[in-house]
Length: 269
Length: 348
Image (cartoon, rainbow over all chains, first blue to last red; front, side, top):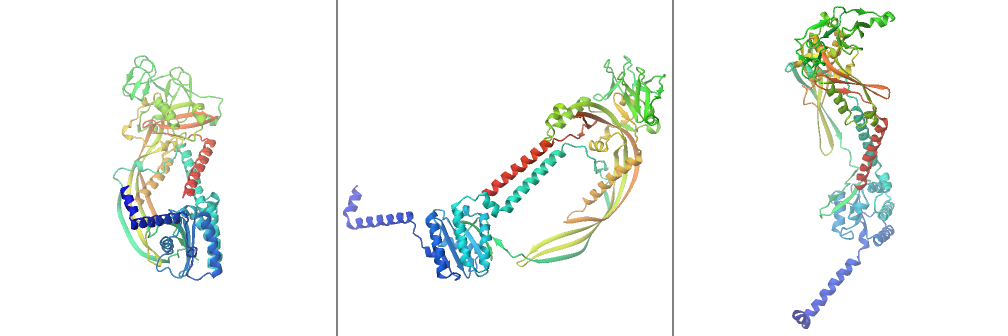
């Protein structure tokens, strides 16, 4: 009490107290009402979009951010500066402070014209919502537009698909069937083969009366001997095959240089 | 033709060979005798009866004896060497089937009792998931017979020279290419191995697959043949000649020596034989009677046969399969594994 009253009677102390209070108040307000820079969400470094297209994408992104607190970022560059598309995309997301909430929920779509790479980086909630199966769905839809140079169509389809995924956050079986038909087929084929082998093994146990094909039990111990034994090297032959170009990589969860983990995937177009 | 019985010196009952004590035992007065002590009592008035009504073919395969105990007719086929009288149940040994060329060189006496064979059948049912549930309750043990099965024991020296071609592969890659370097080799192996006393089923009545799957017998327990061991069991003489038996054992020897040679080829990625030269020479041939319990059970008007090694207790047979259980297990495993796999796939 004594200390507080001393502070209050001291004019300088009083002013400092109020200033500090206001600063804290404004931080709290900022956290509640996240203010963000919509212009930073579409960075067209490679100049693939005209001004009208860029503002169209921005307003689509704006709607998603307002509705779901989920960040969507589109980046085009002419050079990755020596980084891999995956690392570039993850770093761009992390170091520009994208993503909402504690887990930085969001998704970033990177297009690099240097080697015609595309990459999608997911973060926070985005890692669960847009899983590998959905990444490959996006890929199937979007990459052909990229290849044809229809960048605006590619990005707008990407944003619309991201929107619909956020609305049904749990990947359903239908998604799996569309995107992960191969993985489900592998699961069931494997189950079929294991089940078949198991029951065939069980039925084989019913009949133990089988002819013996060998006479090893009756070989006189120590009587097996080799009089000649020769291993001759004849020739050698080396083949050389060009390494296949990596089409798609960077799936699964990985940790970027900032220490945050990302999902996603990418490839060439 | 005479039929043999071993009479108990104490009470005159018919002596039987007892697998547990490995001695002759009288089932009436419990007296026990060594197999060498007992003397054969051949009834002098034994006669061979020939039935008039049977066809020539049937007669050829069938021989009728008079029982020395009760005089009843004992019908055997041309291979029967020891059997039982259907009227008085006494054991009947026909020594003519086991003399001269037909005399076995050795015999392995029964070690496993009838009760043990019966128990082995029950434990054979255990752990068989596809066995029809009602089989255990509904099948009836039709017969359980101790049979001395004739075997040829074949000695064989095998010599082989085999050529193989083999490769080794190394793979590596640099930034632009994948490389595969294949080294080619030519290998040669020559040598031999000796086999002793490979058993070959010498009875046409016995299924070769059953006889081979209750192998091996332990020849250390083999003894010189003595008809006394047959008392209380069935016995057949051989009706497969040694030449046919050798063909079967030679096949096994060939497979064995090829696999033995292949095991000397190590350190290669692939290996296949280019030429195989085998030379087999047969040594001693022995004729043996080996102990086998044969069990028959009936289920749904079908007979199921089981065989047990009368020395080691090794059991073999063929059980029926329940189609229903087969499909239940198959679909259960398929759906169960598939569901777990899908769940994991969805979670990932």
